[in-house]
Image 1 (spheres, chains in turn purple, green):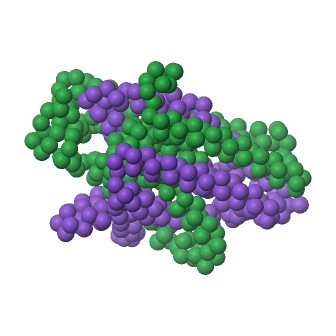
Image 2: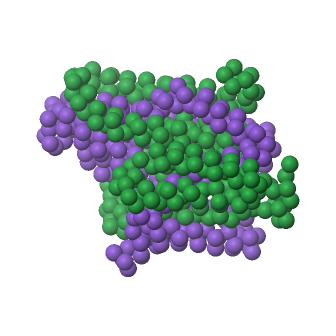
Image 3: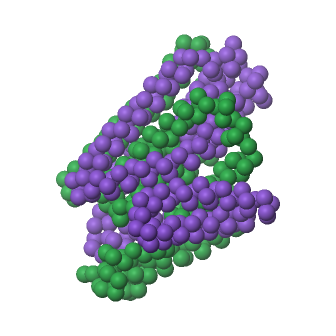
Length: 234
Length: 245
């Protein structure tokens, strides 16, 4: 049997479907519990509905980019395993690299000519390579997070401390865009400007609902403008 | 009471960690069980040596990155870290989603409410993503020409700056209706300058963003502590910046 003889069998779709179902159950139960906790804390249904709508709409565009990755990855390793890898702990940049590393370890240069055992190796190798983060969280996640939370309870310093993480995140990630190319920089500032315009519009017109779609709108229009900038400057 | 920290832990936080750990463990076991079942049925087991040869370069490259991400993202993601790490795409989807939801609700990260908001947002985000991937599988053939067109490929490449530009705005603009932090933007300044230098001088810096985030967190906390103790950075309330004790 060859690589693609085993890579697209219905049984694999079923096994993966079961795995995805477990994750969906986890997400539904988590959402239900978090919703209840926030209601207890005094958050209104409107506020929680805003979070739900905003999170869902915002997630659409990045999810479509994952589907773009699914198309290219499924050409390499078959549709079912690409579906699993991009639904659970996956990121397309890692997956293609990991699959190729496994194939080369089996002594092949192309998936088209690889053996069925290579597909077995691909499944194991991709799993081993990506698993560390979640195992680390199972072991050390709670003590680490409780340690952070303990610091965050210390009066006004606690308030400043809690804000440090978000600020640190921006300080670490955003400078990267300024070292890429002009389109990155223009796209970043376009998105920022659009966000500002939408906030002003929401305030002036009283259309507060606009704020819940602010990020999704900025994302779509920002990405659209990146195509325009690329055509002008590339 | 939590024995290790000797502090009262919010019951929701306790639940979220226990639940997150149990489900994470189930997923980890299933991730290994699935190839084992499949290889047994199809008689396609690789040898241990072959798996080791393929996995070693990945482990040496990606485990340190995973470690740095598992240390640096949880203060914002809170107990949604378990679900976020299971469903992946943390930096380009789960983290922005949590930040956006916390801004919309004025919930502070690293508090039980901030934690619950992040969990709600990322649960919805995970369900949305999994549904769209399934939809994408069914519509793959008709959608392929559109999704692989040069315009969509270009737009996808610039997704992160389009996302973080808008998110960054929320941190530049200060809502002065409740309590707020005066001179907040001084805190990340040194870390941003150092990050910029690293990205300019170290060609692999983008790959090790998790490490840069850890360094940035340490530096921001140190800078914040100094500025807070000198009274330059302080928590105030209202449009006039009245002091908060």
